[in-house]
Length: 71
Image 1 (cartoon, helix red, strand yellow):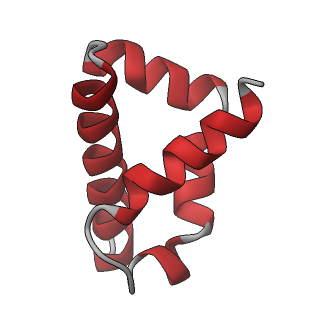
Image 2 (cartoon, helix red, strand yellow):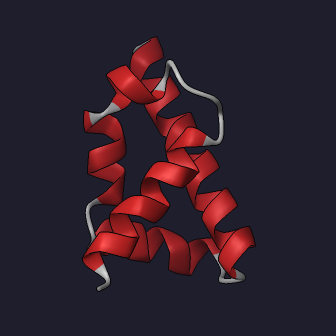
Image 3 (cartoon, helix red, strand yellow):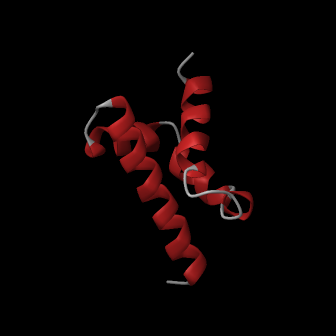
């Protein structure tokens, strides 16, 4: 596994944990929600921009994606 892949995984973990705490759902349910709406793939795809931002950015990104998809 490359360092970039590790960083991408860490961003997904941060987003899942943050989302589950903020919205009071289990991390397992959050991960299922992310997978159902391709949030994990989108975080990985946007790694180039997200890794230059604050550590909260993957969570904010995930919330934006889900807000659009769950309308």
